[in-house]
Length: 328
Image (cartoon, rainbow, N blue to C red; front, side, top):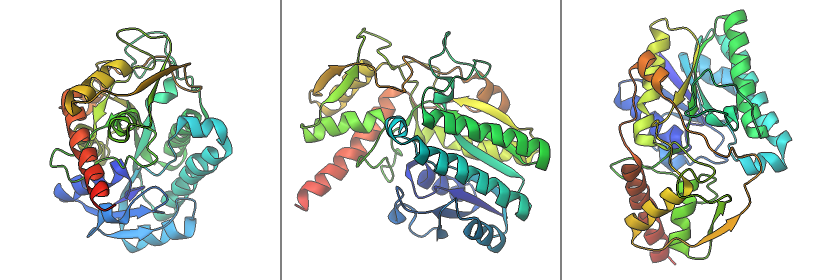
């Protein structure tokens, strides 16, 4: 049996594919390469395709004898979603619906869904638990919550069980330095801060109000090399008969934007250029996770803190930058 990874040539997807293969799983990567890289999954079984293409999805599910899906294919920029909400609903919601319909036709009954902490919006109390009310503040967050709602009803109506993983700002690179986040066009904070150091012409905008800690927004950063076993844990949980669930994935420790900037300065030995501005529309003021449910349900805990996350990301991104400069 085979695990289908949608969006598997992207940042988290490519590391997930490698980690699952190392765990002995048969994997097929499915990606339209809009944001993914074929080189990131070189040597792995791969099919180029779009999750809104039902025929392509059905072809790969039947040909590869797929029994489980890890669904990572989605647009994920909060800012872009505020400018083009239709793009996010068409892809994130429409694509997820097409995927689920195809799973029903092909008899695939397990899916691990990449969700987001953004479904909580700005919570009244911290840290955030799974019982915290959901109140999306952007079309991106709304599209992910709609995905979770569809999963609930497909479970009730079609017996498709799911684990929705609400990530709190996944960041970092693999410890071996083989895979990390492509800084080109990155929407996540840490690669943006690192690019500001390496390029010196793109200052980081820090949102007001400014405080020493919990500068809005605050992130519970979870490194990719810590988060990835969660996908394997999710598959094992569902394959052993676990019921559908939503889980917060994070370190449980809030980290402010200013703290991240300070850590990058320590790792790089350089000053981060900063400018100050208003809160970005669609971003929560502050949010970090209580990961207790993930620990109790799956035995999963974050194994790396901010220092490891920053150092791994710095090693990865500075190496990419040095290679690019040498080729000029």
